[in-house]
Image (cartoon, rainbow, N blue to C red; front, side):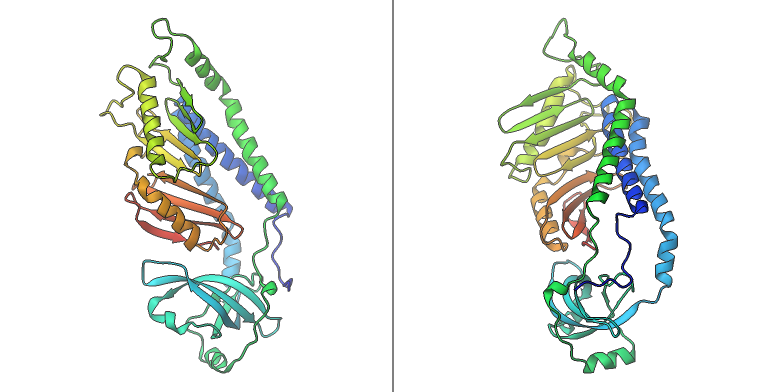
Length: 389
């Protein structure tokens, strides 16, 4: 079954495609500014990489305010629904996220199936059972955004008490329309063009720095001068490749390996530390303040670790990358993959930063259902969850 009445516009409209291209361009520009600014040690460029996406997000929020007001002013539709199945998917507080499979039966439209996730208080959890009848509401143009009405009006409560609904077959499930290939293509194109613009504008600084780093030293040909702002060292083996510069470092693992393997992240961070210490010469690359080299961000993917080190003299929030609770990372990824509504996770990413003042570890997962995330503190304890949808 397909519901077409009041369906929202597809993501391939010109306005949506333009928004996707612009979003990709902002993402590519900001990421390139962070990386290039860290490598050539241009603090204004690095700060711009943080400010541009923030300003863009604020503009999107303000631009969407009229639409949100219209939606808030609209009268949601109320209908009866029957619980086909339900499953609690985690939670450490009094409100537990529960995944419901519902048959929704509007008064003036065909019934349909929908899957939703909603927080239910532990005290009320026993009131929700398979074949039970509920009162739900949803926007007229978004029938998949169903929410359970926990305290319906007496009229609807009476209707729910005496109602009997038939199950709707699984193929009639309604979900949000996919974005489509065109939207993804223009977003990727914008990302690549944004990154290319930044790299093109600062290519002289990048490549001049690389040429300086490659010049032979009269006294120690195998060690770069500590005064070079973009000196790099790299080493590779059959299992991993490590690249370290004066302000960033990456470790890429070979096929069949994962950063979540026992002890792998610790070894990767240590390799960046050791390589940087050796490559800087003199004082082993220690900061002027006391020997610990701080990081602005640490990003972990399946086979890739990326660290952006804090430029000398910057006042941006920073932290010691060796202080992260790496032993908690596998459990955090597993929890994000299994408890946030992503049934078939495709990719995951861990990002550690201190932009808000306190150290935050964010784990994001993506799948066919969309994107979900959870946040943990500096000890790896989960403090917030954002399920899919």
